[in-house]
Length: 552
Image: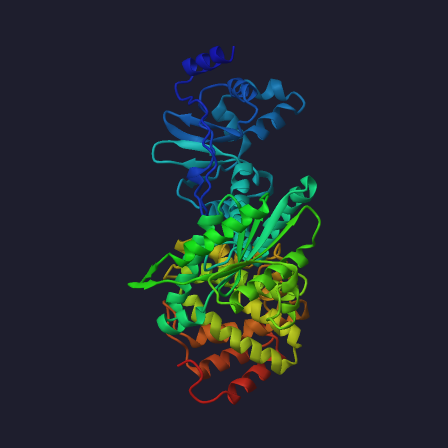
């Protein structure tokens, strides 16, 4: 019956095109032309009842295009047909209308966008329509035809962009940025997942603590850049040797850890011995150098829930220390008589004792990864960020901000523009003045920053600057229109420094202002953009700065 209906419909309507669904794109900054769409249309002379048959045949169709001799007249939204027909005498009044007559009677303006419109642009444009038509589908114009995209599809695509960004940040938070293996946090998360089945089924497992021998000599002889490449190469060799057998991670510096699950004592011992020999026999070719290093390994072993993880990591660390002390380039398994060594060795890596240090390292690595992602996209941001972070901290201390809050201000200043990674390149790097629509998109970057950072516990106390540094004292800033003391102090301090630095520096579209012009602007905007109580303190600080330290 469905096939006959479609055949009949195509017979009376040569403009009808069967519906076609396209999978949702995965790329960031996608365009509306890539979104799932509907190709469905009627001729202007066809009656509304034929449009109704079409919609009843497929409940997912958001709307129907109306053509007159190959010219697009407009789009009839599904909601409008059922709303009109549901009125008293609606069926009698409207079913005899042609599709063109019905569309003209609706008096709505259909939103048509080019296929290369970005998803973010499309959402912004669609959401400024009148309230009654806010969620009507849009028409996407392709070179060869028009297609219908629902607002649900469009809004979900924008959410997918943010989810992808969040997923990328989450990966950065558990990945060592140099070697791309698990960092400390990522290692413990993966290991804890494995421990559930180990305890449940009483499985055997081992911990290997690994340290590159005499690594300082590598840095001293070849330089830190080559040293970093050696660390990456060793990490790769460890990964190859333990792949599919366990979990590995970098604890920092030249130190690694491996967790082997469901493995016998002898197999764990053999794997550690093999790893030690393979590393010793491998030449790392880096920038023309042939570099060979060795590793020392300490191993601890357990079964089920017979030991705590603190005990196992302490035992493996004791064994590693003994391996280093007795000649290096060897694997030592823990035994009882090694326990007294912990009194003389360097601080052992008990997970409990290292908890705070581990959190600090995780924070630093995540922050480094985010900044690297931002700087790779816009290298000019790095110098600006360094300047404003330093000056913001100085001004915060002058205002009397606590040391703990200064740490949050430092992180917030470094990440103040992180939301711009979600702004399309053609807007972010445009040389000329932004259009009204482009400026509206640019103004969303504080919200993107908030959405990106707020789920990460490390950054929840540092959100004031990324989220609020474009708020104005008079309440006419964005994104929330905060005013006066409702704007967090950290953001008020940063806004002053940020605008001072922007005006004092060359930009692609204008040269730097002279310092007296910048100062006059700050004074004029006190109580408008800036906190009037902060401006005199900042100018006082500038006067105290050594000559030549201000931007030319």
